[in-house]
Amino acid sequence: MVKAALRRLAYVVFVVWAAVTLSFIASNVLPSDPARMVAGPQARPEDVARIKKDLGLDRPATVRYGLFLSRLLHVSSLPDTDAAHKTCGTLGPLHVDLGKSYQQRRPVLTILGERLPRTLALAVVAVFLQVLFGVSAGAFAAKRRGSAADTATVTASLLGVSAPTFILGLFLQWLLAYRLNLLPLDGFGKTFADHATCIVLPALTLGLFGAAYYTRVVRDEMRAELLRDYVRTARAKGASELGVVRHALANVALPLVTLIALDLGGLVGGAIVTESLFRWPGLGSLSVTAILDRDGPLVQGCVIVTSAAIVVSNMVADGLYGILDPRTRRR
Image (tube, rainbow, N blue to C red; front, top):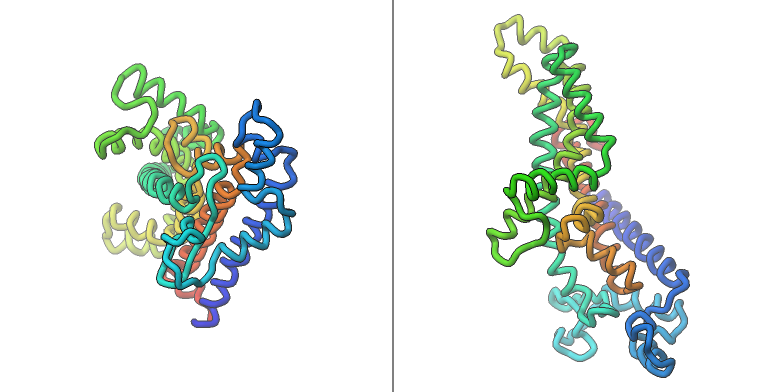
């Protein structure tokens, strides 16, 4: 178990390192000057040169890359109030430093700490709706295979999978916010009640989009399960249809775990289109802004969170495999 844990940890470190390295290379290959974007289009050349020096952009890319990696995770006895460690997050002597945003002039960790809980809340609610709608519709269609209800459910799921999320989001804005005036059009609000109402539309957009695919998966898996011998035996012994469906759903749980883990990891990384459409201040919209501003430290911070969320979600799925199906455990 120790060897397996170390192997997985090494895999996480490698994937995050590769993602950060690629983002660093991309930010340096693009023909743009972050110092010019910070200074503004009308800034004098000497002001741009001064800003470039302040940001450390006058150094070679290899030197900046080495400094970034050396400060990313380091050990220090100095507190984070020290001048050289003000951008660090500390866990005892262990320091994590993602640098300071070029545009916002604040530590990247602070900005990510503000945005991550909002994206995490959106991801959890969206995945809950995906599972709720997708599993219910899939089980309903499988139980009535070949009927008009089955055909209607399959058609609706195909439309849901085919339609881009922004089309669905715009329709929900028009219907629920503009026509019926039930929910805010977009934004985040100031109070908890505002947050709870503002999250409904973006979460519903992501939930319905994901539920369409969940419906297809659950329907196909359930149809196969309902034809197995144990189902016929259970019915012959007088088991209720609700009990039969419940047992069949338990056997469909394994592929669902994969979908849920991947969706949750991807959404924690940021639903870029949906967050931008609804002006939800999460990691997705932050990533777009950072890329457009050529804000290298902020882009790399978003990449680290995104890649780590996806890798960790895959590890959780692998762990759940062993619980749900002992045959998948490695000996």
